[in-house]
Image (cartoon, rainbow, N blue to C red; front, side, top):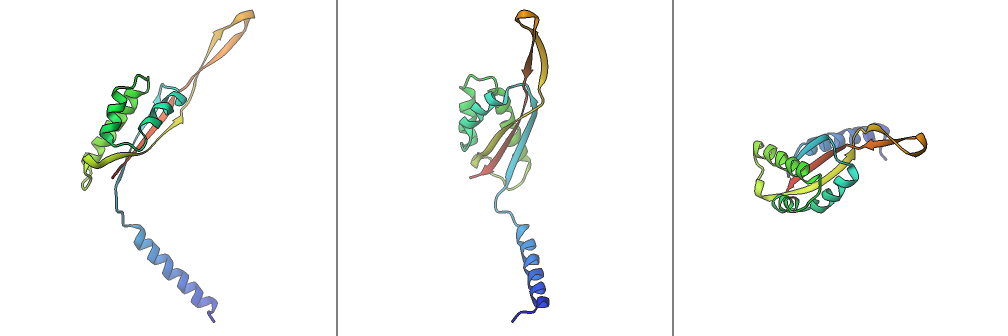
Length: 137
């Protein structure tokens, strides 16, 4: 029967083994973040969902032929992530793919516009934060 002292030692030993194992990485991820982009997050997500899971070259060609307002911003962000991958050693740029891309809402610019019957209607000019995560295949 295990005493509380031996159980405590066993837990300590296992925790140490997990710590040494956690330091090893088998693949490298590269991410790039663009903040305060003046595109509505809903419209940017439409483009982001088109390229999720694709190879970088395929994703860039899709963005070139898609006529949406957020395409130049996302294309520039992917180019930035690829450039930071070039700086790291051990990453093959030809095998990179878009592991994840997500668009979060940024701050809104609030403006007022005159409406009928003397009212003022609030207009919310939305911005977004776009994050791209690339990984090796």
